[in-house]
Image (tube, rainbow, N blue to C red; front, top):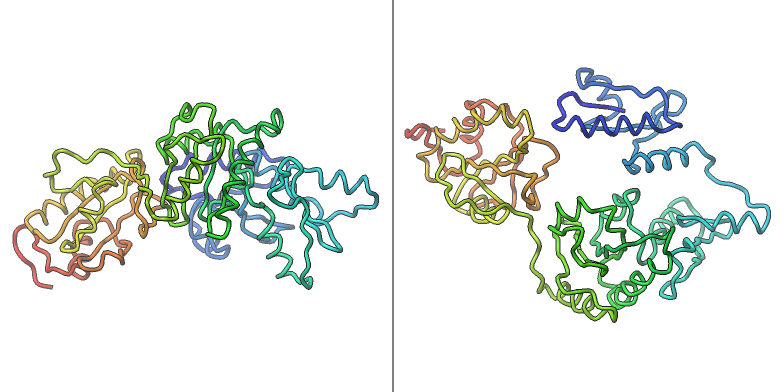
Length: 402
């Protein structure tokens, strides 16, 4: 387990470490700080936290499983167990496929969907018909393992959310109420089957498992929707939409929502702080709703800092960043800006994984923002702007030559 001492949210790393230590199959957990660049380089560590799986002392693979305690234990049990098991009797087969997740059985390869997700809208058993190779078998499993409308959980969310995904959230509980859980899922599948060829995937989820995410990412509270599902769409580009009409039992409201989505009539949901009433300071405050106006102004060169209020490095940068803005305040063509990335959606094209993250959006090239990788001293920022800005910077009221 590789943990950076400079990571801006050490609690994230420490929580993951505790989960690893809680796993009965994980032993000899090692913390390697980035003061050992040779070690990190040898194992291809470029970000933090990074989790690696070692077998017999050798680097086996990167850990790409879930990051909850139960998810890590479940994943590692699969890693520790055999790659396959022999089914000698019919009872063995019944026990093997009667599982919470999908099962794959060969020699004639069959994929069995979990019994709890059985539906008239898709086959419960799929037969693999191609020539068996590693590539074709992996593709078959990848394309079919989740089915038309899987149960989204904290364990499989990363694999499902790399696509354009519609999710219906409600009081889903396959252990206590499988029939009630499938009642709404079947309605999603009935409507979704009409749009199956248009590139949108579907899922259902227990709203209690995603309360924080729904509130933070979509502005939806735990009581929204009542007993009815509420529906969201998140695209692979990060665009977000919510169905504001009540989910009707005949599925017509969902059908209208999807028709509007594919016709481009829906307004994207954007998490944003209110636009400041006053914004005359040297550092311009940007929120999601004003991002287009300020940062993507085609006439302005804009340097923008994405920060988090709790970030220590951001607080250290603040006086230097303000001094930079003061020195360039008289230049009408350059904007020094900042945005709280925890309270506002970060637009597409700006990859913000840690804080502070600084980007430069050149005048006339707003579709090509550049990440600033230099030092955080005022002189370094000014040197960078002299080399990158379309307009010659005016520093402290005096235009300086390139």
